[in-house]
Amino acid sequence: SGMGVEEETKIKPETQGGFAGGFASPGDYEVPDLPEAPSFYPTEQEFKDPIAYITSIRAEAEKHGVIKVVPPKQWVCPFTIKERSEDFQFQTCIQAVNQLKNRHSANDVFLSQLRGLHRKRGSPL
Image (tube, rainbow, N blue to C red; front, side, top):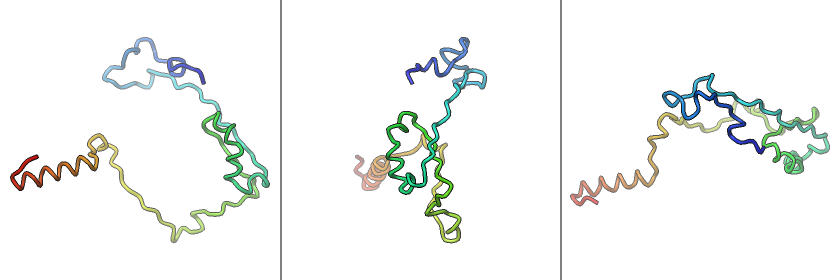
């Protein structure tokens, strides 16, 4: 948008250069007003193939980053979870966000196990 960081986020002069304790307080900054995402209202004919429609508006949509496409009232989604709720399942995983800083790559784990094996055999790496 051509705005610099200082124009987008206005920091109070007394807090420039850092915040006490490294954390910002609610009054330390202003969040700029964001423009509304442009909305597109395709006709039933245009939306017969939703992917083709999105492809057709891509150039315009990319200028904004985010858009809203409102399908025609007559359009029926070909798949909904409600229709298949009794047999619809998907795999979930728990991500301990607080432990991300402590994660080890597969290579780290392999090398650790390899060192342990060599230590047990009496020939450290």
